[in-house]
Image 1 (cartoon, one colour):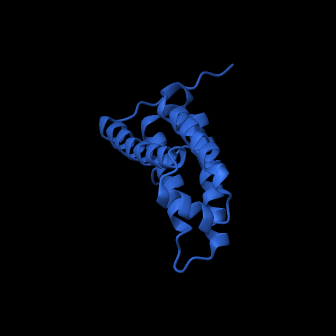
Image 2 (cartoon, rainbow, N blue to C red; image 1 turned 30 degrees about the horizontal axis):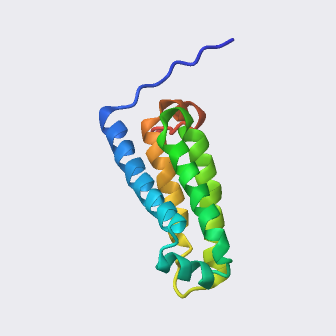
Image 3 (cartoon, rainbow, N blue to C red; image 1 turned 120 degrees about the vertical axis):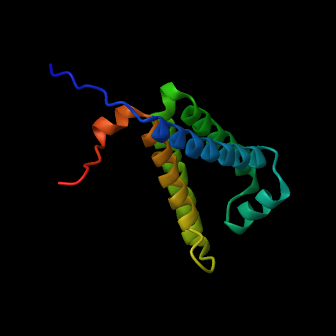
Length: 135
């Protein structure tokens, strides 16, 4: 069996990844908590999106669980995969709502940030998704 050496992550990349991930985590915790406590703006957004208000708490618990998995280093990749699915659903909801402008880009960009933050702080991802430098 071939052994693959783990490439180190530079201090700058590690801290940049931590900052990006922390900002994503804080936003997602805020999103989940506002759903669980049924904050009035969140209730209004659910109704506008065509979802039953009774789904608010289960949605909040789901996003909180995924975010906690993302925040724990040992389960961060699983958390990122689950958050990608969650944000895909959010993208679909935004497209279906047909709001003016391009609000569907927010969950797409946010999903990219979840993975960029993880990639910068997780050297094992560099083996799976190598970034080639020049030719």
